[in-house]
Amino acid sequence: MVWGWRVEFRIERRSGVPTYLQLVAQVRRALRVGALAPGDRLPTARAVVEAIAINPNTVHKAYRELEREGLVEARPGKGTFVLHALGRPDSVTDGVLRTRLEDWVNEAVAAGLTVDDVQALFADVVERLYRGERTDE
Amino acid sequence: MNEYEATDPVLRYDAVSKDFGRREALRDCSFALPRGRVAALVGVNGAGKTTLLRMAVGLARPSAGRIDVLGEDPAATGTPAGVSYVAQDKPLYRRFQVREMLRAAAVLNPGGRWDGAHAASLIADAGIGVGQRIGELSAGQRARVAIALALGRRPGLLLLDEPLAELDPLARREIMGTVLAAVTETGMTVLLSSHVVTDIEDACDHLVVLGDRRVLLDGGIDELLAGHRIHSGPATSTADNETVVHRSTRGRHTVALVRDHTPPAGPEASGSTPTLEELVVAYLHAPTSSDAEAA
Image (cartoon, rainbow over all chains, first blue to last red):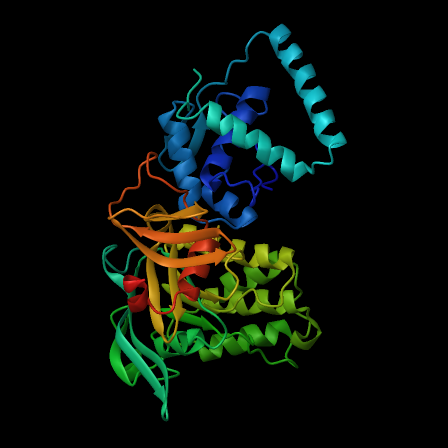
């Protein structure tokens, strides 16, 4: 993990999701829950690379993708900064979905699935149903 | 920061062969690495990975062919100044203290390229005291000292022979993290050998597979993965534009790794993208690269 920053990256090696997309998803998640706010600086490529031992190109690719989505902006010599947060749908819907997801996870636990199984399954379904959809602005 | 044009290969093997007496260790090996690449040299034990690395620093001479390292020929000039090589046994003087090792490195690296302060700070970052004796350090700490000394030369090319062998997962990540941070900062090129693909797949962007004394596969990892497909099923068929690299059948189930000759493989292509491990295993199990064409 990259400590001391507002987003902590970790790589799930068995998930089947390309590493750069995992980084993109983690920044988006941080934007969604408010851990990252407009004006915040993303960790430098060097900090990410040193902490989780991934190729620098992977970090650059993830940050370029976030830039393409308009979520962050690279300022030469200064770093990559958050432009704006990601809005959430209204919290009532949010709460209902959360409850149903908790029920689903409980079922998965009862069926003996491991954390990795659940995450892989979830990531797979999301990847399939949201295919091609990168921006929810 | 730039000593070389970004387009110049930092390291190039050109039809390199190596014989030990009557035994042929490497035959007609060619590949090149541009600046900033982090390349994995993968092959089973005894495939010739160490010999290939040693030739790049003049510790062994090609029997035929030529190696170009940062514009120099190591067979003629010995280890080029811009190259650091860390052998698998990480040779350090076991009875030396870390500070004596740093002093020895300064003496052994004359000519102004040695950056002792940088090496010392990498060692401090690793939580290793300069008063500790090399022989008292853990395997992971010894590896970190060896890497710090290698990076103290401020190399344009870093060669690592099985850098992660026998290390615990934390030490592996710390060592690769240190190396990759240096790549990010300086654009250094890295060639590291490994017989375990999963150790290095997130760290590397280039792959060289060595087997049967030859280079079986060489290229950028993203391009290589996009250029291959895995077909799986009771009877796998292949299209005209594909070549089977390796096919394995268990009962009525067949899995084939094929090379797709019409890149880029679009989402409509059949089969699935292989993992790096599947790709490497298929090439290592293929009879030979030329036989695979006929398979």
